Image (cartoon, rainbow, N blue to C red; front, top):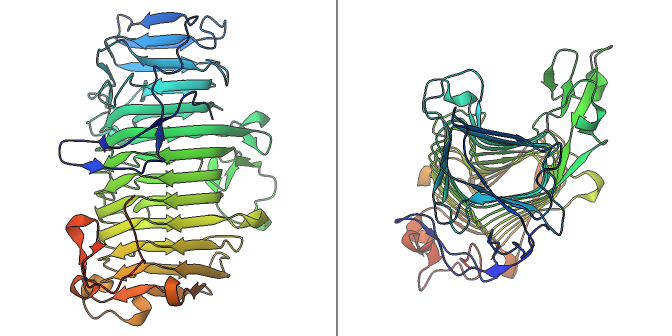
Length: 455
């Protein structure tokens, strides 16, 4: 952890009409907490072209220093910034002033990222006190899908990003290291990038993914410069294949994501992933069936925990799982509220016989199945499914028993019994829940202790 101080959060207000109330154990960090009396402070402004480009190869900025951004910037770029675990370099807004970064009129060409970190380590970037103090505004033009609002790349790690508002553009946050031909340090397992915290951020209006965390390619074929998703047994002879670098220890929490073209929170190639206390709504607005997850636990992920999230009112699937069971990896999807969509609810297609504990979730009002488990890619073991509440699958009309827990292609599940029984209802009325109160059971409901409980 690169957080030097932990506070307790009672209420976080994202906007005037949307509020999320995490539990008492939710932690945040203020960018004022780690500033020591010996820290050097610098005030940074844009050049005459409206940009800030800093290459710290000469170590002008050192561990513990504070860089205050002042004014508006078309783009901001940091390269070779190195703090330490005890003294991260802090980059924030100048005292009590709002900083705006980005180029809404960008329509192709250079400077395709509003804010970028390259080969940086032990960094804390975000607003001094709340998410309205640094605003990153992406492109609104025809070419916007190629624009990235916040890019974390080229082996950047041990970084915390927080208290930001990110709007429009293509991707809200991209955090991955791309393989470079001839550079072995950009391939796995030669390098692992560690410790990423993303929290207390609002992302709205991105045309692509709100968050693109980790490299999605199973392999990268340097010979043709393209991703490869098949088996090594089918490599093209003579081609140069590598696996992209993986993240280790990623936490994504207390974020509000809305009006997103593709996936909400997309993750891949991570060992040790926790996604919690996020709200995702109105994702998948492009209606692209290949990119429609509210929360996506992608390929090459191991040891994941997805809990206490609220995903609702979107076109695509609430939660998609493609994680791996390699080396005995564990996976948990627990105490999430998934409500109102136009597809399946939780969709499972893991690899390496991944086993997922799917417990105490409420999945309500899906157009398709509440839970769909597909064993085609090697997830053949029995998934642990207990204490969930499944309400009104199949559009709430004529639900078949298979619409609650649907298994196919060799997929399988063990459902809980007695106190851990899954509760299944054809309609909201039969469930006896209050949708206006996070689907909490009304008096007289037979749900009992099953399903989501807001903490």
